[in-house]
Image (cartoon, rainbow over all chains, first blue to last red):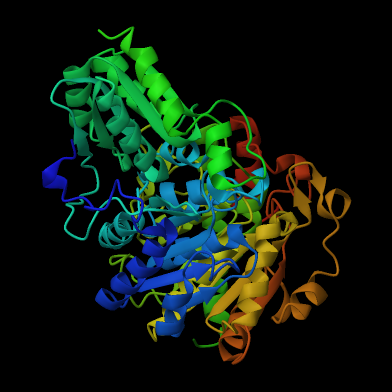
Length: 330
Length: 286
């Protein structure tokens, strides 16, 4: 059943559950952060509407910086701002930022310890019809591998707002990952959110499989958990919203309770959140795992839901993975 | 900033020469690193740290300081040596360059050494960082000047031009960039590798005020910076023509000296040249 302490959306499993793009939370979070701190500045590479930076641009035009289509320059200029007293958010599609400008982020932001937040939008294949060129499915890997970088992957629009506000308060480089499409609202304003603290959203009485998920697919993980329970398989669903620094304690706790783990993310399985979980478990509590995500392939054009199904990240696939790993549970 | 009188120019020349000698010694001790660029930029670094910059070596984080940003981080030996002479840290620390546990990294790392404004080395990203610092200065109504020293080789990089376009659009008059126009890069001469000319026209068309100077003439360096500070509506670029390996005859104008240090024997020859100003001064002991 749903964890009551998480104070989740009561309409979560209903058909009329609110659907809001996760990226909207970025726009709202920027407004809050901008009001609280006059040193918050926002840079955008010719995508202010789709990255939801435009509300900030309207409210604080003197603190909004239009870069044009120049993501490398956006990273380096933000690096300069970030060492000069500013809290700089850079906004673009994740394929370009942190894709195209990876080295600038590495040298001038991360190694340079500049106070810059990288907002990667249109992450995952649920970008849909735009196709694989615009579907970032490597960004968790390329950001979490960077020393001095934090990685936040919010599961809905409300959490995205909280993550954006939290990132503004933290000193130093943070990567924030957002998807494009409308997704069900899982949390509420009252849901506790602390970066680095993973959250149990669902716990069956006798959990046998831990489903560790992040981002837009947390919803699918919850639906899978509910259906699995009906079939007599107990689970824990962990919202692992902070990939780095990861909440190792919580990951170990759910792995110990269940003895089998499925990780779920809209990202390549290589190097992503699941890999990060495996790194923790291999060292401290080796646990059989299954990995839901893209299996060494690019995406393609299509409707978001079609793509999620085709590439094995739907509810059915999560359930199948849970059953598969259960056979090898320790 | 006051114009340069003869006595001060003479003093700067002497400091620059001492800095060149120490660069040679430092490179020999390090056993790796770049020779040509640091020697070629010794006069310009001397002019900045000993005349142009509004700075305080004892308070490297002083908020109102002018920002000197080095984009082509590989010539950092000249920056480290000049900073040591200016009083940022003891000269003895220069021996640690490129060695383990040192604050003097092979390419500059901002948080390792107070007085560095950025982390640099990967070419083409210094102008963008300088633009960011200049932009922050504008937003906060600060009076500090931002100086970005670049190489000519990194004009090959797209990021440089993205930053140039942005600075022109935003009329960043608190930003002055300087290109070390020494015509060499690792693989050869710049105009063979990737022609840059007409460099002046290119920057002018991007909305910059452009000056060309002899990068070994202190009066010209100081005058150019004074002009840059007076230009009201544009960022300024100073194209400083320099001689790579300046002061050491067998290194001058030879791209093969871009990325290697002298051996002890080569260093002895180089030091003798520098100490006698290329044979012009005869010591009584000789």
